Image (cartoon, rainbow, N blue to C red; front, side, top):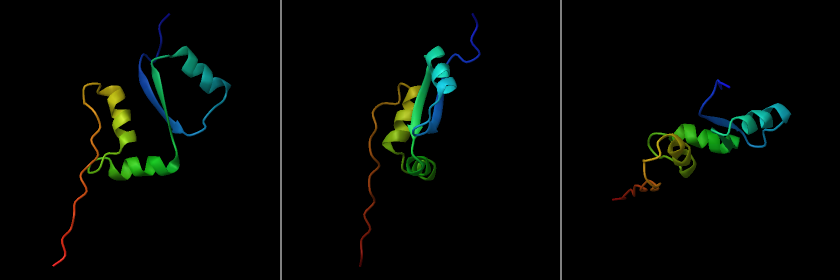
Length: 81
């Protein structure tokens, strides 16, 4: 019994469902499902490189297990003269 997909991350809109979708997840336990709202998805894309979010870090950790724990980016303070 050879599977086409051995491992994967399936990023879907929050609330995605259906019999075929659930069957795919059931038959492929090494597919990690991550549900996102539109707002979270936009934030992940917008801030991916400069200010990674906790959710983005969690997604990356599925692939890169040894990246360590999430540390929120430092907020830069501006001084007014």
